[in-house]
Image 1 (tube, rainbow over the protein chains, first blue to last red):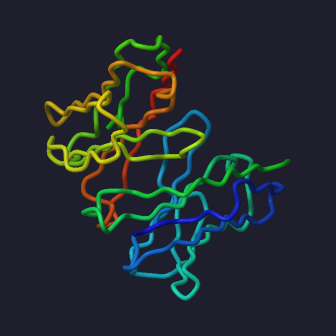
Image 2 (image 1 turned 180 degrees about the horizontal axis):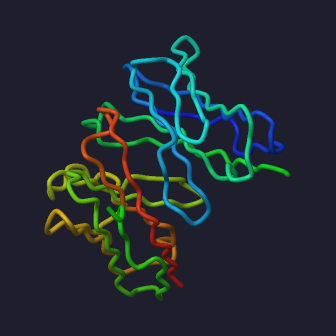
Length: 115
Length: 116
């Protein structure tokens, strides 16, 4: 079965400093991986997705993630945090054992950005 | 397109009452998903439909929960009778195809349900 583990429940950074949100996955297959962001009282929005075409994936708002098979990781990074990045971030894997319809969400990492 | 539309945005009800949540997916999307989000359990898939047919309802917690999709533009999630432990945010999402094929799911704004 597939699973994801987000290693930090809360990350706090200062505006203008780098962001690193960590995610490890477990999968018997080549995984379909995603990062979604949820701003307060809003629905989830896709940041980026791993499609196996490239290990370094660029997303919206300056975020990117690197797929590392040897480390089973898919960490999310951004060079310089902005106040508007404060939100909850979810690392997500598609469940290949279930006709591919089920998304398995990590527990989320809440990102705080200090001025 | 207006995106995925959910109604109501907030619902407060008393234990034992019937609750109906509504969702309008993005036009042209063949898949519709219902999720529940709680602090304790995070985001959980309840059920998903393909072309209006339920494909996987293994996440539906119990018989008190039911979901229907009478046509391509409308789905309901019903709880009868409701209980305080059903209090959560319920999200509807739609997509062109399955996430296995790297397809994005588009989420609605959610319905915050409080059962007193």
